[in-house]
Image 1 (cartoon, rainbow, N blue to C red):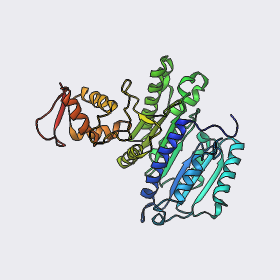
Image 2 (image 1 turned 90 degrees about the vertical axis):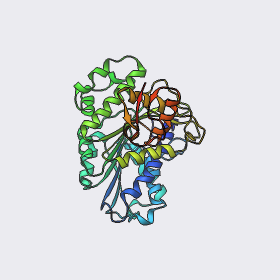
Image 3 (image 1 turned 90 degrees about the horizontal axis):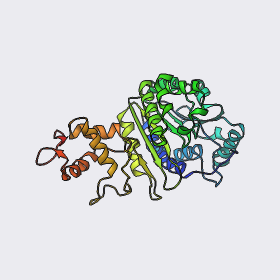
Image 4 (image 1 turned 135 degrees about the vertical axis):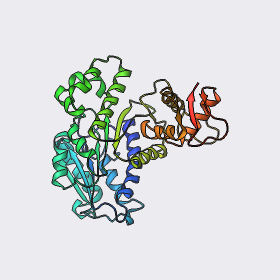
Length: 362
């Protein structure tokens, strides 16, 4: 691969999600009287653009921060806001520096601190964050590799126990099919030990392989200390999907990520999918919950899965959808329950549903 490469459809779809999430994250972290310092880390920064001229994540992240509608209330300063971009390849690192300077001028003249470093994500991220005195204040770490997830779980553990910090890890489309090419010691480092991943290496069916590895990584983030973990596919209309795992210690982070997923532009046919549902095909989410629309088959399948484990109140079911599924929110429980009851699948009280209403499968 050269310095630049083609923007894949799944990457473009993922970038739209990032833009929505970052747009919401900055004003929450930088509200007046809030945190004295916030750090954004892009550990696989890339060259800053693609073959077709599309912006890379460092460029659009910095641009959307500096031009945010709430920028006047954020109190931007070099002391308060740090953006760290790490790129391993020398030529891409130099290209990224050039693109940032071309777009924003001298970086030392900006109202925030921008650090562009040549380094390896897994080896150098923790050291660079330490150099910048980032620990002890919120960090959003984006580990957005295409094919080589090598970020050690020890770093994830430190981020999980750092105040108000979150991580996003991407697995590329070929990651799950080329395990034999990876050093077992690297896998031990990423997943926290061979005992946690060895059984997945024997799975032959490609459709089960990626689901298993993704769930193992979700469990690894749990062991690292992230209370909430979302796992999902980003599925473009054409081309191969990407696989993301999001870790946060706060329910608010889950809510903000899911709102980003529901407000992102899906007019080109992109969708998000939960790995636990194999046969339900999303029916299109742009206007999914407009009056008269049928519930998404994935939502119904997930609610059925949950109720097979035992009955739940409407409040419990809503919280489960919010905190345990890839994209669904607490408010989506009601529509699913009404639809499943209409199919004669549920036992539930007559009359109006309340938070305390108990629901179970027949």
